[in-house]
Every structure is written in structure tokens, then in C-alpha cells.
Length: 468
Ligand SMILES: Cc1cc2nc3c(=O)[nH]c(=O)nc-3n(C[C@H](O)[C@H](O)[C@H](O)COP(=O)(O)OP(=O)(O)OC[C@H]3O[C@@H](n4cnc5c(N)ncnc54)[C@H](O)[C@@H]3O)c2cc1C
Image 1 (cartoon, rainbow, N blue to C red):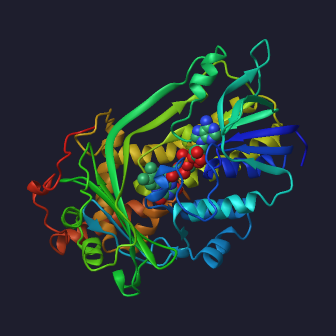
Image 2 (cartoon, helix red, strand yellow; image 1 turned 60 degrees about the horizontal axis):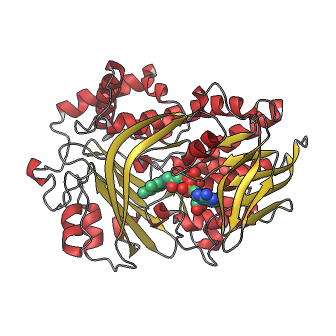
């Protein structure tokens, strides 16, 4: 591939940064990844990735794309770290709109392992590349630019205990997550900050790991509950390495699960399924309760800025982070990495930022619309509800009911959630007809089996209710 420069810097060695660095290694003589944290000697959670203690799974699309960049990655996570590959539509139970979707075999193969294992394997693969180096314990504090302030020439960084230094590069990628300081750093150089979209959801995830027994959940590898009325509580229980489960649960706008056994179980008992509760009630805990407060979905609209340095990119959660109930963040990072590769292949580094942001926004639109659109079903979440959004949410509700008896619809829905095909494909006449027919059949068969939830279960065990 064509060499586009001597040196590229990636700030942040989490999933997005590692994937971006892999792509850049084909185009730049040297790629340096600067990371504020130390790299742990084992695959354990670290400070800079606090969400790493909570349920993570890699969707089918993400698993495919990472395999393209790092052939053999999925097998390595399984054979070397004990991860599990599974059929997303058949090995995982999906509950949405308070109903369970019918399982059926599909070719959607996702990867289950803890977040530190997914990242650790990626980092080890990346650092085997001869032209990639990483500097842990190295915090970036700002940018350096040319006198015309047209190009960013490097970063101002500080290795733990040392003085601030400037490191020059031809291209710089910010992959520092949702707390990214790019807007501030660029403002210091005279650039305007991007417009921001924020949707307050105030979800407080509470998570804990447990020993997994082969009979749990009848051998299924996971269960995902997408929140619905009346209590709007999400949950996921996913198999991980070392015969363990990770359970994460949380409601909207401060409706958090308690961090004591009785309260946690009681909270799980208010979900539209008792399956997580029943497994956990007799399972051996393997760690403490962990809390993560996710206040709002956040999107930074860099693609709308008229003036931006051509050799500076923002990547992954630093562009957009949204309610992770469908587990799409790492897959979006992988999609952005492949898009960056295409941008570099087609027109090199010429006007790279403008081309990349334009392409990335098309990637982000889909998971953002899926996650935010779903959150806006909750009447307590503030935001504009267009008539199209209302129609789509109505239609997806009908699809869920029909999918309780039709696994083809489950697979169609999960193809969208797994970012394999666009949401509009669910309106395809063949799918719409199955939805219509399934609805009629379900109505004729009587009420769809839902666990009867009492409205007074909303917030029953929650002292923090109402806090944002
Ligand atoms: C509760 C929860 C559950 C989730 N579950 C899933 C899931 O199941 N599936 C999925 O695909 N996604 C999931 N996600 C999203 C996923 O975690 C992120 O999308 C993914 O980690 C990509 O993030 P990132 O690499 O862009 O940023 P981050 O993972 O946030 O990493 C940012 C990195 O930058 C470093 N850094 C920050 N500032 C500096 C600096 N100044 N200098 C140097 N380094 C710096 C940090 O130390 C860190 O390493 C979940 C998120 C949450 C909150």
C-alpha cells in the first residue's frame, strides 16, 4: 500500500484506538499509540475504561470486521482466553416489548468474552506489528500546530512523572472515548467546537459476575432484556471466559439496582422474565457489585464543521456514544476502522478529515437511530418524536409480537441490531407480510405470553429514583 507519511499517532489504546492503529500501520512508516493508563499484565479491568467491568459482547458484524483486520482474532479469544462464539439468534434469548423472541439458527456469529479479554487480545495482536509501538502511562494534554493553524503538527503529552513534550506526526487520531477533549484542544488552536446532540437517559448499570453452570439458562449463552413499559429496566446476562456470567442491569433516569443481594435480586425480579433472577438466586458470586452511571447518549457532529484540520481525526466513542443496550459500540469502532482504510486507499491523506467524518456519520446514523429511537419510546426521556419514529416504534412492536412465534423475524431484527443490514430492510414486503400474518395469528391464539408486571413495580426497591 502507498506510504502516506512517516508517523501517525493514535491517542487512546482501547478498542477504537487499537483498530485505528491497525489500519494506519499499512499507510504510515510508524504508528505510535499513546495511552494514559498502564497496560495491565493480565486481562483485567483498568481505570481508563470503567465500562470494562460491565457486560460486553461483540456483535456478528464487529466480529467479522475485526477478523478482517486481525485474521484469527476470534479463535484466539476462544482458544487462548476462553471466550465463546455463539449464534446470536439461537444461543441468546432476546426480550423486548416484554416478550421473548423465538430462537432459530442463523449465520450471525457473535463473540462473548469480558471487555478486558476482547481488548487484551487485540492489543497483543496489534503490538506484534513491527511498525506499531505503544506508550502507556502517557497522557495527551493538547495539540501542537503550524503557525497558520491549518494543520495539527503533533501532540503535547506527558509520560507519568516526566516533563511535557511535543511529539510530531503527519496524522493524529483521537480515540479517547466519550470524555474526549478534542473540542477543547482544537478551540485552543482557534477552531470552533462541534455541535453536540445529547439525549438524557440517566441509566445506572449495576453489574456482578457469577459462576456459570452448564445447566443455567438451558445451556443458552446469554439473555438480553431491552427496557419497556411499565418499569423500563434493561438487563443482560452474558457468558464469559472462565465459566462465568456477567449480569448488568439498570433503569432510566436514576432507577438504579441496589448493590446488596436482596435488593439486586428483587430488582431482577421486576424484569419481564424471571430467568436472570432464577439463575442468579443460586449462583456463586465471583466479584463485587460494580456501578456505572451512563447519563446521556452523546454525538459530536464534526462532519458539520466548515473548518477543521485535515490531518486530525476523531474516532469511536469520541464521536458518538449511545445507550449500549444493543452492544453496538465496538462494532461501530470496527466499521469506522474499515471506513478509514477505504478513505486512505481511495484518496490518501488528501482532505482526509472531511472525507472520514462524512463517511463516519453514515455509519453512526444507524446505531444512533436504533438506540435513541428505542430510548424515546420511554415517555420520561426528552427528545423529538417524529411521526416516522412513532411509526417505526409501532411497527417494531408488532414485529416483536410476531417474532415470538417466527424465528425468521427474530433473525431479520437481529440482522439490523448486529449492523449487518439497514433498518429499512425490516420494511421489505416479505418481512412486512410475515409481521402482519404473525400478528393476526398471535391475536387469534390469545394474549402473547408476557410476565404480568404491576405498574407499582416501577422503582419499588430504588432509593435513587428520579436522580439524573
Ligand atoms: C455499560 C456499557 C456496556 C457496553 N457494552 C457494550 C457491548 O456489549 N458491546 C459493544 O460493542 N460495546 C459496548 N459498550 C461500548 C464500548 O465500551 C465502547 O464503544 C468501546 O469501548 C469503544 O470505545 P473507545 O475505544 O472509543 O473508547 P474507550 O473504550 O472509552 O477508551 C478510551 C481510551 O482512551 C484513553 N485516554 C483517555 N484520555 C486520554 C488522554 N488524554 N491521553 C491518552 N489516553 C487517553 C483511556 O485510558 C482509554 O484507554 C458498552 C459501554 C458501556 C458504557
